[in-house]
Length: 109
Image (cartoon, rainbow, N blue to C red):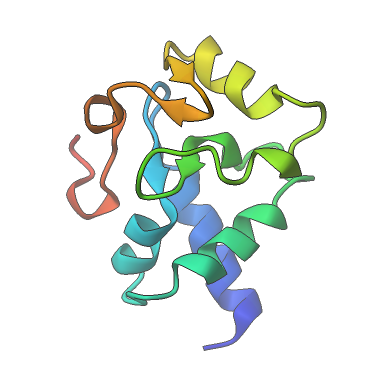
């Protein structure tokens, strides 16, 4: 699979994450049939910084950590965007991660 095509598929999934929800790099990879490619999903999200229609702030690591926050402008932009959606963040980690988690495999969440 070409990297470019994979990245586009990642962006399509990210665009489906509902307001006030988050998902993980691994959940997106799993949904795309590429289990074990969470890091590649991360690379795709890093490359989406100039794409306003891709809510990259809603993609975190499997423990709810804001592991991609250094790819956002300013020191706390990722956290601010999440908090604007009603998601509480403490010490770079989402509080009640399970409550806010959206699994693309079960998109009715």
